[in-house]
Length: 77
Image (cartoon, rainbow, N blue to C red; front, top):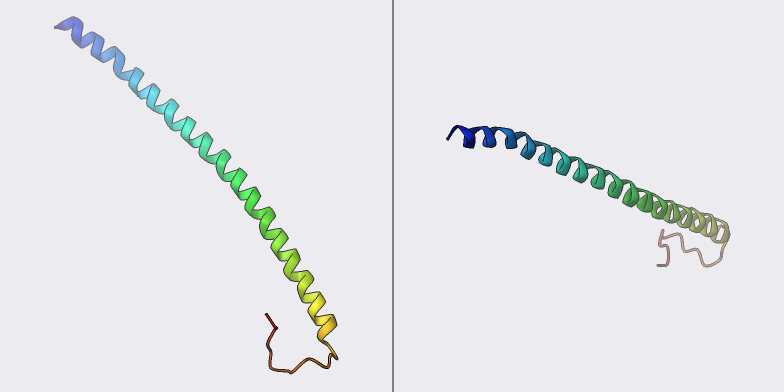
């Protein structure tokens, strides 16, 4: 019985080490995935911002003084 207790006591640290390695692996994977997805989202939002800015410049330049401007605030889309 004494041998069983020694064996049980010596392997309890092993379980904690395995748990720690698993937690670290999950953390590193999560951080990497978040950075990758975050960069992709940032790039897409930058493209959307540029398109909106471009459309705003186009519409303000072409709609001023235009005979089709009804003044109702409608954007035509």
